[in-house]
Image (cartoon, rainbow, N blue to C red; front, side, top):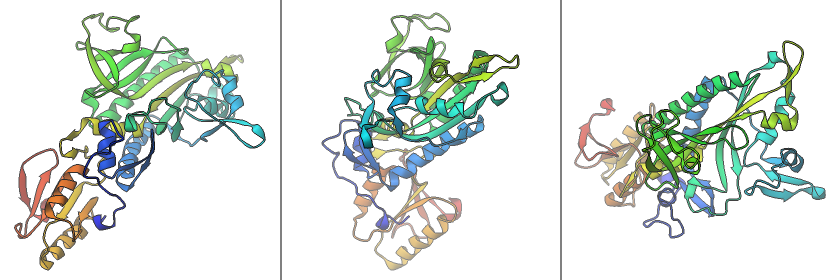
Length: 405
């Protein structure tokens, strides 16, 4: 991609109407554009990052047997009435269609996926099943000042598993916990994320969150350093010690929730009468699990963690491009050399080429730091037949041949 053609615009100063680090940097660097509080457009740079996060999640969900589907955003009111959540869920966006028919904009999809499963699952031979989607969600958040961390419109991966009994659900629940750890490792935050005990609500005693350490995080957890697991702040009164080892000397940490897993058990199966015929001929309820992971929220989390005073520092796995090639010369021969390098590198790698003629070298370098692509390659009057390379998160500069890249 030639930067002269890129649909984006950087800002010299952070936007005044943003409070969160992730929003300030992503808007300033031209990754996203604010439409309203908690509502953003993803520009080409931002959408490339979001897509890469989604693809990592998608690969790991496919690896544990997940089949991807896509369910509607618009849900009939009666589905939410059937689970008694039409009036109890405070963040539900409600609207009326033609003829006064009531609808909700989906904040989650249990009310849609369970009736869908009834059309597929009839016998024990039809179980287990694992389906997921990556879909836009809507929540009428009263406070949306955290950029991509707390949106009114956001992207969520929600995965649903269907089982014959609790034992099979428990087994798969652990498989999903391990899959989440692989996702976090690939995103570069596995080592700073802990599995956290949280309330299971109406579904089970516990659910689990994957909480990432971050000084600016809105969540609070209580960490057991012996077991490297934690307890959510909302659960700490009823569970004041580590559930694994009993340690009551827990360390308070600020975090951002990147994912969560729930054992729904038969909560929604009962509401929609989702049953299966067992081997002995009796009808039994289907056990369900739910596993959420937010790609857009993860994008914000990565920026909250990986940044410095100059801008964003993207992990290579999700960076919009691997290389940021910059021409600092006005000499025609050097320009041609830079163009040739761009063509050659683009055969194998994703490259953003700053070919802009009317931008000063200082502006180009400052913008490169702001955008945060992992490797900066500079061609100038001084580099001769070499290419100056610098990693975004390091200060050392080295001269390379094209064949070394």
